[in-house]
Amino acid sequence: MRFLRPIAAAVLTASALAAQSQFDFGSVYLMSSYHYPPSGVFYPGIARIDPVTGVATQLVQFGSNAVPAASAAYDPFRDRIVAFCTIGGPNPALWAIDAAGNSTVVSNSYLVRIAPRGDGKIYGYKAGAGHPTVQQIYYVDAAGQEHVLLDVGGAAPWQLNGGVTFNDNDPIRAMIYEPTENALFLALYGSNLVPDCGSPSFDVSIRKLPLTADGTALRAPATCNEYDVGGSVPGLTIFETPVGFSYGPQGKLVLGVHANWFGAMPRMLQIDPATAGITPFATFGPFTGDINFGCCAYSPLTGEAMVLEGGNDVWRGFTPGAVGGGRVFGSYGSPGFGGGPGDTLFVVAPIGNGYTLTGDTAAISVANGGVQNLDFHPGAAFANHLHLILGSLSGWAPGFAFAGAHIPLNLDWYTGFTLDAVNSVFLVNTLGLIGPGGTSLAQLNFPAGVLNGLTGLTMHHAALALDGSLQIVHVSNPLPLQLLP
Image (cartoon, rainbow, N blue to C red; front, side, top):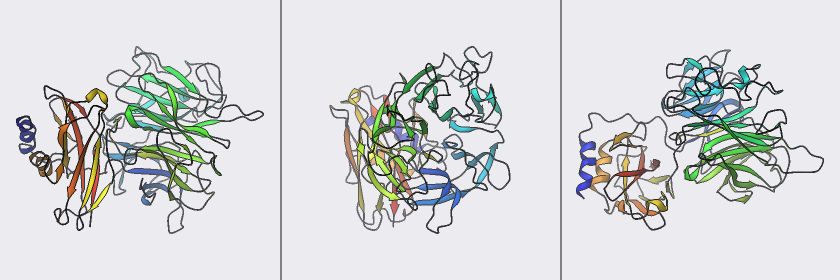
């Protein structure tokens, strides 16, 4: 195992341990104007949602019920939730919120449908503004200064409809940055007023904006694709409203779409970043209340797209290809209180990760011991490559660089342990060959009492794929494991 020595040396000679990450990887948060806590006292703000049980924990309460849709996201550059909202004053601003609910102003710019890039830039636009402002994309930089996104060549601002006016003041309902393509993706409302890929229609449409290396302008013209979620119902107009972009499995994007009619519909779509092609992710319905499709986000911890369904006020989880009512895993208030396209659901994760490491549990007991089974599935292209699983007890961000790769773990003594104890009774098959199908299995096995003194901490692990010359050719997402009493 001589090839492990350079990595071990990097761990042992690290000048200082990185600070504990503010947020656990995979944490899910809901921004809403109408949270329903156990106390029964409604509040506008942000709550943490357990993706396994649906249990909500308040993070921050806003000072106003005016909560713009799709206007909160996790920003790994700042290691903060960034949200356009009102906190402690009469005027909204772009705030940065830490894991304890403390907040500071990033910018006084009005930006909604925000999308962090991961380098300090946060994209957004100005819903409700007049022409041409409503057609333009803006961003604040690392210093909080506002700029407009420029068109190809950098001579003038990019405009959604090429400068031709249209009769809608809120066309863009979701936005996300995708790093593999270095592109910004916009999801547009199907209102028959917003220009889609031809003449206006009621179909949802996607714009892909290829960006220059610094993210300040387009490097190529925007492309457009559209999809008919609602289908054709005689005598009925079905409006299609995007309700949240997220990073999905296998490098795809997941988009939730609210449609104002009942019945089975592909209200969860997946977008291929390379082609911008749109296909169904899962079909929602039919069941009583299926019209009440609220916010949506893909959870890398459960492998499901989470939806807050407001007709019955329950959380539902959908795996790729699912049809019907999905997995009901928690309630959220009294039936009928929520579920429209006004909330924002988002996940704490690196920008654009493909989620190739999953586990069968998110927590174990220190006193009783426990096992987390790991499934590393980078794909068939990596068959017969080596896999190596590393860990950290001090978080996943900002991580460290090694041999040209970014590893989403903070170096500490436990990182060294996961190298020294590979394929031990505690770390089973954490070094080995990836199978012919592009999958390998491993196990963390900690008997009762072995982790005494670590209660309350969270381990994170990440998997590497190495080729025949021992070059790192793939790095997974970090995967958390909470250490409970």
